[in-house]
Length: 397
Image (cartoon, rainbow, N blue to C red; front, side, top):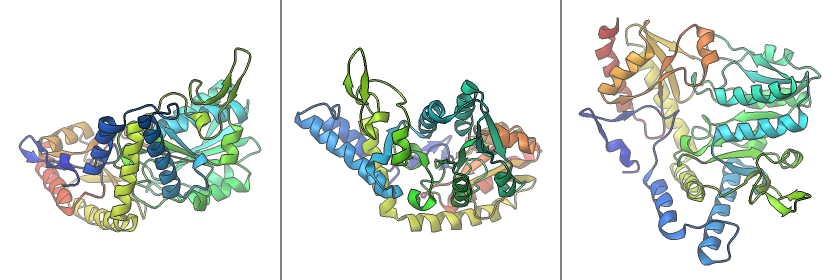
C-alpha cells in the first residue's frame, strides 16, 4: 500500500483520515527516501570533499532543480529551502520589511489569510509604522476585487494573499490579483500551502514575485518548505539569518554574503527532509497532477451533495471551483464536540479556527469542523463521514 498509516485502526474502526489540509500522510517512497538518507548518506552538505558529503550535496541540489521544474521557476537560484510556508513568509516579511517598508507605507492582505500570512506582516509594519489594508470577502468566500483595486495608493508596497484558503477552500484568482498589483508597480507574495498538492503551479505564468509552500502538505516530511522568489528581487533583499553557508568571506570588520540561493540558507539544512520532498514530487508526478485534479473535483462534488443531506449542517465557504476543503457546523454544536465524537468513530477531521480567526469573526462563529481531502481520499471515506455525522447529530441537537 502506498500509505501504510491508512491501515491504522482507531477505537476499533478503520481510520478515515480527513485532515489533509493540516498535513498529508506520507507514501512509502517518501518514508524510504528519508530512511535511506540516514542509513546511507548522512552527512553535512556543501562543506566536505569526502564521498558522503559530495553524494548528499548532489542529491540535495538535484531536488532544488526538481522543485524549479515542478513550479516552473526560471532558475534554481530562485528556489530557497526553508522549514515551511511559515518560515518562507517570515523570511520575506523580515527582509522585505527592512529593505522597503517605511513609516506610512501599506501592505495589502486578504481577510481569509492564515495567521502565517498576517502576523509576519503585522510585525514588519509595527517595526516601522506601516499598516495593513484588508481585502474583504463575501458570504460565499469570494474576494471582493473591486474593493481590492481601491486599496492601492502611492504607499502600497506589497500584496500578500493565499492561493487557496485553508478554511474555505476558495481558489483565489491570483493571476488577476498579481496583474492588478503589477499595474501599480507592487510585488505580490502568494501563500501556496493549500494549492501545491491540488493543482499545477507555474510561477512564471502567475507572474508572482514570491510563492511559498510546505512539504508536509504535499506528501513530504514535516520541517521542509520552499520560498520561490524572483532572482532580481531576492538579490535586493538582505540576508534573513547569519551563520554558516550564507557567507563568502567573514572578517571582524566586514562580511560578504553568498550568492543566491545560499544567502538565505544559513546553517545546516534538513537534508533528509529535502530528499523526502524530492520523493514526494516524484510521487505526485507519477500519479499525474491532471489525474489528481480530476479525482479531487469529483470527490468534492460527491462530498458536498452527500453531506448536504445531514440535518442541521451549515457550510462555510461555497465559492464555485473550491478545492480540497469543506468547513461546516452541526447546528449550534461546538466544533470540538463534533470532532471528538467523529474521532471515536474513526473519522479524523480538524476543529477550531484553523489559524484563521478573522474568518471566524467574519461569520460570527467560534470555529468550524473541517474535512479536507488528498489524492488517496475516496468516496468510501465521504460515506463514512456522512454516516458518522448522521449518528452523532441527534446527540448534539
